[in-house]
Each structure stands twice: as C-alpha cells, then as structure tokens.
Length: 98
Image 1 (tube, rainbow, N blue to C red):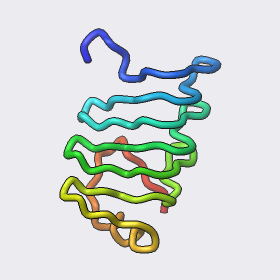
Image 2: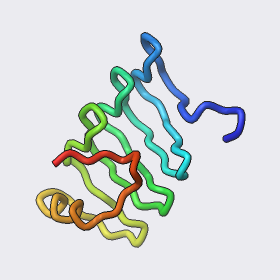
Image 3: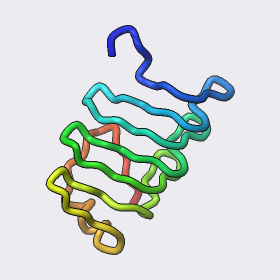
C-alpha cells in the first residue's frame, strides 16, 4: 500500500462520504457506506484473520443488524451476537457499541 492512501472512494467536504474502502495498517479492511468521515450505513469489515462483520453501521459503531462470520465459516446473528461480542478480541480501530 506504499504510496497509496488507505482510503479509496467518495469524498464530500474533505471527509469520506458515500461508498469507499479503508485499509487499516493491521491488514483489516472496511468497505461500505461513509457519512461525515464515519462508517455509516451498510458495510463489511474484514479482519486480517479473514473473520468479518457484514451489516449496518451508525457513525463508526456496529448497529448489530448483521452477522459476524469467522474464518472457520461459523455465523452468529442477533440475539446471540451481543454475547459473542463480549468474548471477542478485536483490533483497536474496530469500535463496538453496547
């Protein structure tokens, strides 16, 4: 990624806005909707391990209307999702609302 911005996508008022992809230094990737520089709307976060969350975001927080897929192909959806979040170790850039 040397020489490239970690974000590729739409901008408005010098902020990420619309559809775009952000590549974290950890190897994780978020692809989806942005609003006012924050993950907002439908999106997919894929961790460096291959595990991912595919669902809705609200200003950088998971809206818990989606599922978390582990690379082992297990899938968890609401209502079990909140209990699962308590047991997960996620990268620091991944913010979860409670």
